[in-house]
Length: 410
Ligand code: GLV
Ligand code: MN
Ligand code: MN
Ligand code: MN
Image (cartoon, rainbow, N blue to C red; front, top):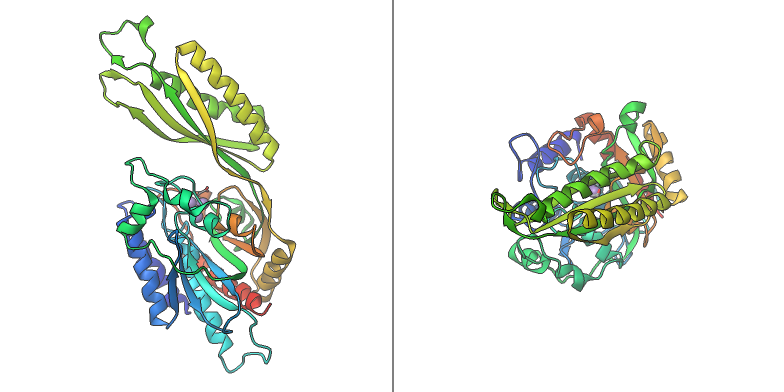
């Protein structure tokens, strides 16, 4: 890999599903997602790497170094949020492809050490990390890790009623290939926060992930005429939902600032007409904290608030837990390896937590996992304004190549 070749590829992928304000819209199993997959397969084919697609649409490129050995897997995801940024996920996959190319060249290079690699190398593009179209997020890697059931995930439907199975078949990526056996996993991603930028450091070694969970909330009222119905007779599902949204925000104030973060990011209403009092609203709240007990306390408080709101407005409101992800610690051995690699390359690094979800959160349960961050300008993510400089991206590829090199040597 050369920096120019990496950057050319990064910017080429950013043109797939590009949005007018500089982002991308590549939700899982859409035509734009297919285009990035074809790009990934073509990259592998040009280097003679075999590609595979498993039963949940995860896409692998196998770089054979040691025939028959398990694989050190490098990767992330090429799908995006609606109106997402061009760095979230895609950076990690393109970095992994270029890092793999560099590792393979180094293994067969003239100055390769006498003790060769003990593991193979593979790159992965995980299916549906984002979960914007098909919930839950981190779907492909969770199935790979055995945390989620493949058949159940294939039956998940988007808001239009299309299933994961149908959507993957439609883009030609419902595979059946055998999954590679894994020795270790490494992922690089933009931070999506401000800590590296604040500290002026190019690399973060992720030491832990936050506890996260969603609440799928359904508010049922009574459909009626917005003009003709007496105010006292209204059972307005949207009015109840508005109260719920406010409480989801306010529950964070029970804790010190930034201890708990929460939002309602998705809302659907029926029948959605300006002249009809809504009969049904579905909304999804996302709660996250370092400490699981904080999220659970907030959740209990919200359930009490919801019962109060239902009572006050004459509504039926139900809430269901889903997409619950434990807070996790990444292994000390991987953190030490990352710190040694950064020092070797002369890159400043710090340990850092992730509040966002990543495929590595799933992989950390089944394989020694290293999760790396590079800086995000202004900490913005899940929006078109996401930005990381070319120099930071290139340093990250070098870092991942060094980490991958060390991992294939056992
Ligand atoms: C998805 O991007 C998440 O952070 O959970
Ligand atoms: Mn991501
Ligand atoms: Mn994301
Ligand atoms: Mn994520």
